[in-house]
Amino acid sequence: MSITQSGLEISNVQAYRNKLFSFVGNRDPLEVLGQTASGIEEVVRKHPVDVLRARPFPAKWTPKEIVGHLTDSELVNGYRTRLIFSEENPTILGMNQELWVSRQRHNDREPAELAEMFRDLRRCNLMFWKQISGKDLQRAGQHNERGAESLGLMLRMLAGHDLSHLDQLHRYLSAVKSAA
Image (cartoon, rainbow, N blue to C red):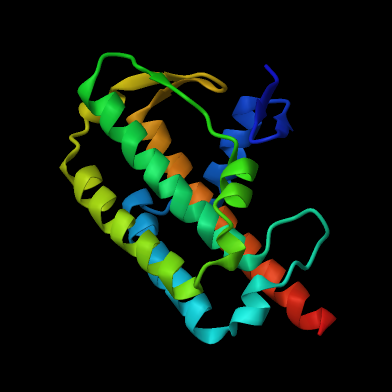
C-alpha cells in the first residue's frame, strides 16, 4: 500500500511504522513521551535563535520548524486519541505537515514559546494517556492515509515520532554548526 502523507510518498505503511518502532525499541512509550519536552527545552536553551532558525539543507525544515512540527503533532494527536477513545471506529484525518509548518511561520516564532506550548500540550495529553486501560488501547480508528490504527499502535508510533524528530533535530543542529 502506498500513501502520500504530508507531501511525502510512503510506499509501505508497515515499513514506516517499523521505522518509528525501531526508535522506541523496548522502551516504555509513556516514558519516552514524558521525556520529550525536556529534550526540546534543553535544545532551545543551549542554542541561539539564529542557529535554531538556520536551514541546514535546502527545502528541509529548520531546527525551530522541527519543534513547531512536534507541537502541531501534539495538538493533532491529542484530538485523535480522544476521538478514538470516545467514538466507535472514527475516521482520523491526516494533515499536511509541510503546510502547517509554513503557514504558521514556525521559523518566525520564539523558540521558548514553541517549547512551552509543546510542554503544556504534552502534559495534558500524558495525563490522558495514563488513564487509558489496556483494554482501551485496543480501541481503533481508521486513518484516511494509513488504515486502521489502535490507541496502542498510536502510542508506540508517537513515541517513535518523538525520537525520530529529536534525532533529526540534533543532526540538523550539527549541520548548522558545521556550516558556520
